[in-house]
Structure formats: structure tokens, C-alpha cells
Image (cartoon, rainbow over the protein chains, first blue to last red):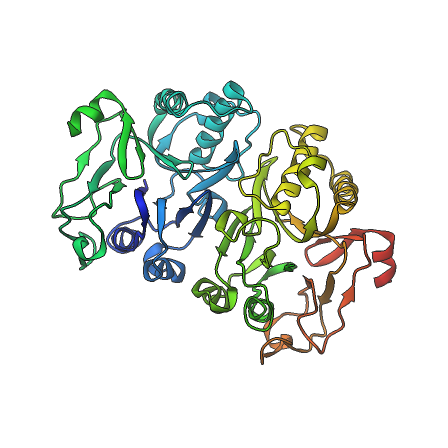
Length: 266
Length: 266
């Protein structure tokens, strides 16, 4: 399987702390040694760093850890291959353009019979993974339904959640999707999240000896949500997402989702 | 204006030497300080490194210089902004997917009235540059003409050359385009190239004190073509492309182009 990590924040924030923990799971504290990738949004633009090498030993991952890129939305993935070879075109996250936006996606899980069940017309995959295939099918469905006009946020993400339930029938389909503004997460089997806001405290990583005092790094107005397959810290409260639930974040805040999600936080 | 750099090779080759020269022009020996980017193909996959900061002072550019990523096709760009703000979404190269391939493009020049003259239906730009607009229009034209079926190489690149001539009427349109296999270059005003093959010799960069002896770095069978806006070395013979000429490289070899190009090398 793989591990996912994502962030939504109301001010450009670096993800160095969380990434330092996750990258250890790519060949060190975890078995996800078949490549990794991270996409940072800055406004409408985004940039990705990818490597088919294990993140724990990658000079590019070292750069991402040391160089604090400030971003409002980040999506990150470390891979343990099950569908598709270990190569660059099979390395998440995947980014494609639609409606004048960069759409970035990463998946954790495994899908069966995806080629037969998810028929693609326009958005042909480059690689051979079930993950990219499902992303391309999702874009195809959006395009075939809404054509050249992006629907409202509410209609858009309810549509995506609906299609996610359909794909989820084929196996395990935890995934993260963003257009650089909204961060959408669908939980098939495992996803956790937490929102950090004032009063900020300390947090300690599980995978490497590192503690940060967020009070020294933030202002009172900062709101930062982190989503991860498994909790990354052992002294904070992570929400566990229920299976088949979806959630939508904007500027760090939960702004939509399944009833089971909104019930969790109220 | 901007500067372009590209490579086509028959074996995975690093571009550290050429990039070391070019990056100096991004804020040091040259005025192209408004961002830079480089895309490396590895098989069908590609990865880009981008920064809206000057390349001469960018930690990411330093990594690209020091970390020899081996690739058969590379496209690189350093930017001096004239159309569109300095930000990530306006930073070249641009990569989009079509026909199950990653298409990467970078432009040097300036286009007038591009929004009126180049009407886009499907491939909506993310940023605000003339460059990305022209790329999106080109993809639109390909899609509207060939729809879901990629034509033969010959038909495809002649079509692109034809559309390039049309866009070139709007100003200056030097550009590089690749699908990871073929490397296409169109010269509007300035582009140079050279092909390195056995017997290999020494080469010295113009922009920084660095000499390489390619004989020590290569095997007898290696063929590597480098394309650049201006020559990067002062002790090798660079071909100057004629205005409005196009050329097509595959595995380091020139395999097609305008009559003026094929005449140059024969």
C-alpha cells in the first residue's frame, strides 16, 4: 500500500515537520520504498518534486525537508507498489489541467478490474497504475458531465464524492484531490486528520526524533489542517475518518463532507 | 526575453554541465531572473523542478546542478518576464497530457494580440502568459484536428510546424516541444544547436569557469544534441538555426526539419 499526506492552510505554511516524519516511512520506519512525490500549490501554480527512489535516501527529499516552501495546499505520497512498475510515470501525485486549474491527486489502495469497469475516452493515462487510471476516469466523468464549464463548488465535490463511492466498489480507494484552493479527501479504509489553531502547542513526530513548538512558528490567526493515512505525531488528537466518508477543506477549515464527518467535529 | 535549453540523447545523460552555464544567466551573467524551470523525461514519465526565484540564487537550481539526473530528453527555461507576472503558474516549462503522453513546452519571445488571434476552446491556460496561451492553443488545434487519435510522427510535427508559423506572425516565437521521445524546435529569431558524438573532445562554458572532457564521460556510441538560445560553450561549433526553420530530434539525431536545416548539416 502507500501513505498519503496533505495540508490545507489559511496562510502559506511549510510542511517540513510533517514531511520529515513521513519520508522516514519510505524505506526506513516504513516499507514504502517505491518512490515518493510532493506537490506544492502557490496560488494557481504548483510544483512537484518526485523520485522513484525511496524517500528516506533521496537527495530531493532531503532538499524538500530542508528548504521551507510555503504553500496553502500540499499533497504528498510515498509508494509501495502493487499495480504498475516502479518508475517515474507511476509516481504520485498526478497533476492534470482542467477548467484553467491544476488538479492534483494521490491515491492509497488497490483497485480490481479497473480497466474493464472504468472506461476512459479522453483523459488517457500515461502510466500503468490503477491510481492514475481512476484519476483519468474521474476527470473524464467531470468533462463528460460538465463539459467546458466548471460547476459550483458544492455540485462539483458532491459529484466527485459520488463517483468515489463507485470506484471504491472496486477495492480500496483512499484519495486526496485538490485544485489548489479546495482539498478533498475520500476515506475508503484509513485516513486521519487534525486541525491546528490557537492556542498552539507542541507536537512530536512518531517516526523520527523531532518536536516542534507551533506557538513559536505561527500567529494567532493561523489555521492548518493536516491529513495523513496514519497519525504522524503521538501527542496530538487525530480524527479518524469513517469508511466511505468524504471531507472538504478550504484555507485550513472543514467546509463540507459526509454527515459522519461533520458529526465527528461538532 | 528568456533563454531556452534542451537536450536529446540516445542514452540517459545528465545535463549538469550545460545547466551550470545556463543558470548563471538567471541573475548573474544574464538578466533572466524571473524564474526558471527544467523538465527531465525518464521513459514516459517526467519530472520538473521550478522556481520563481532567480536560478543563480536558487537552492533547487543548486540541487539540479549537483544531482546528475540521467534523461534522454530535457527541456529547460530561464525567464525574463514580459507577459504575465512573476509567479509559479507563469514559470516554464509547461507540461500537459494528451494521447497518453506528457507534452512539455517552453517558449522564448513575445506575442501580440494572442488572446484575440488564438481562440481556445478546451485547453484553458492556468496562468496569464502569451507562452502558455500559445501552447494551449496548439494543443487545442491538435485535439480539434486529430481528436482522440495521435497521428503519425511525420504528420504530427509538420502540423505543429505549420501552426508555429501562424503563431510566429504574432511576434517572436522560439519554442521547444517534446513528448519524451521526439524533441521539436522552432526558430523564430534565435536558436542554436550542436550534436556531440565520438570522437568526443573538451568543451568550456562561456558563463562560468568549467571545462569538461566528454571523452571521459561517454562511450563511443553516445549521441547527444543540445539546443540553446545562445551557444553555451566557446570552443565548439554551434549551428545557428535560420529564422522560421524547425527541426526534429530523436535519440540525439536530427531526423526531420525544414529544408534549410537539413541543408545546414549536409
